[in-house]
Amino acid sequence: MIAPTEVRRALSPLERWYWIADQVSPLNVVARVRVRGPLPAALLRAALHRLRRRHPLLRVAIATDPDGRAPRFVPTGQPIPLHQVRDDEPESADAAPGRETGWVRRVNDHELVDRIDWRSGPLCRAVMLTRSPTAGGPDDEVHDLLLTMPHCVADGTTVLSLLRQWIELAGQACSPGPSELAADTSEPALPACEAMFPRRYRGMAGTLRLRWLLARELYRVHRHRPARVAPSRFVPFTERRTRLVARSLTAEQVEALVAACRGEGTTVHGALAAAMVLAVAAEAGSPGHVTIGSPVTFRDTLEPAVSERAVGAYVATVPTVVRYRPGLSLWQLARSISDDLAVRRRAGSHFAIVDLVGLTGPESVAASGRFIEMMERSGPVNLCLSNIGRYDFPARIGPWRLSGAQFVAGLSVCGYLVSTANTSHGRLSWNFTYVPDALPEQRAASLVQASVDAVLATIGCRPAGSRQ
Image (tube, rainbow, N blue to C red; front, side, top):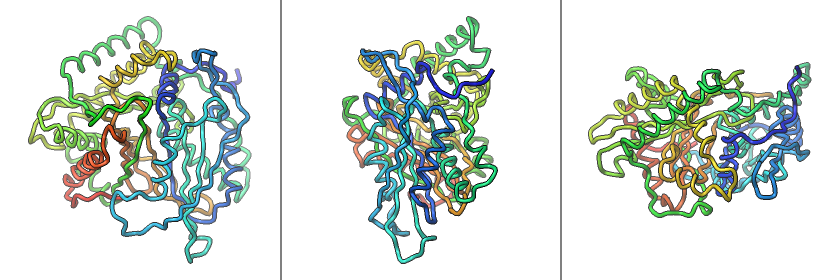
């Protein structure tokens, strides 16, 4: 049987929830990479066209019934738009940590706050941000490429993979060969992730297993009543927007952190999450339990497994409840987080979270009030770290030199402080997003700096933010 190459199906419960959240307040995922060398816009547009032909979910819009219910993917002929933007402020090598660079300004002013038009599609847009020319020649041209998608069809792996494929297709056009024909082969139109759950979570027995896992998750939260990031003031859901603070660790710092984590019997994810917990707990000023969410990818456990090239949202956020008391070290917290996450990943808690959305998720924006209020009270993304680890992004494609590949996640109505992390091109990009006014700028900056400082202090580095 030949797999279909067009997506014509209803949104799954998980996709529908992300789509509804985006309508209340924008929920985008953004990928960025820096490209050095001459880069014609016409070449990028042609590569976007080929990328769109490759992936069925880049050729869809979303249609609904007149009452806004029953959302479904429908084909669209609209091209992926490419916005050309000039950055008129040259960067300085000695700029202060935290100062907004051109791509960060673009992300804050547009990519995290401007919705993608799901009615007309496609569910993707691209930006080429070109720095003002200097005295150098064409080889000194510097561009930041951005790819933005709504969370209903993308996670961090999706946007980074598509960004890489986009540049690879442009590179193939520079030196066409036999591989160019293969590159235009369309990917199959995959079903919703819920339809590919492992067999142990299907049927009556699978449903009972998921409900038992879900009951255990809810009991943990009810029993410990963990502290959450409390807003300085309540911002109405429809008025919430996301703002980015970009940080990174150098290659030397990453090497030291990895070595320290191995020596302490934990993971880099555990260390970064522990640093965020320490920052939030220190601000609260009292011992107790703190919850931090960790989005868990399940691409490789679906049946059939889904490759990182595929477009879609294949993560579920698992909350870890951490006991905090003054004097507890980062490494103690890190081991607690990484051990708990490993146990619950093996148990399938991330599938239980997806099941929860299917059980209680709303069917439309008009019916979403109670679910959004539940997310506000106890949702797992209130404080969250989405870490995809080492992501292989080439340092050179075609005639171009690449650096700084990373991704950023919007918040919508899901939480107040989220960070995303990936290690590419030798650096660990650690991007924090927050809801302005709910977290005033100075408060957000303090939490970010405390998190970064906690990590640097544990590896013997002078606490100081690092900019990329």
